[in-house]
Length: 168
Image (cartoon, rainbow, N blue to C red; front, side):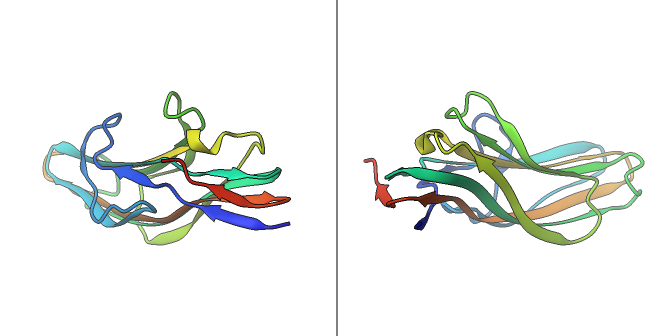
């Protein structure tokens, strides 16, 4: 049973649906280390969205969405009046609705991992999208930040006979 990996073929930052500012170093499989920060009262948001996964021909046995991530956060007040968040979401219907893949809030240390979600083997892969958001809110006299990256955004597809169908 062949395993084929497909990646999104398009990205946009900032994500028009979430707004905010652009992430750093966005490519079709993720973005490099990006920091959202604020000193004093206010907030900041940075977003990105990935789309256009190729179709896979043959009989699909399983589909798994995977996104590698890193994160780190700092605050001066122990999150009494400040907050930070790193959110990764996915859509199965071309962005009409979104599901949470990973939601980390009040981040105060470094960590990394892979967010994983099994999808239906009947899922239209061209309808899958992924987006992320880094956000912070601060208060007078305080500072807060979140730094995060995403990489290797992919669908791992197990098939009886694997074929990638590139739609142009």
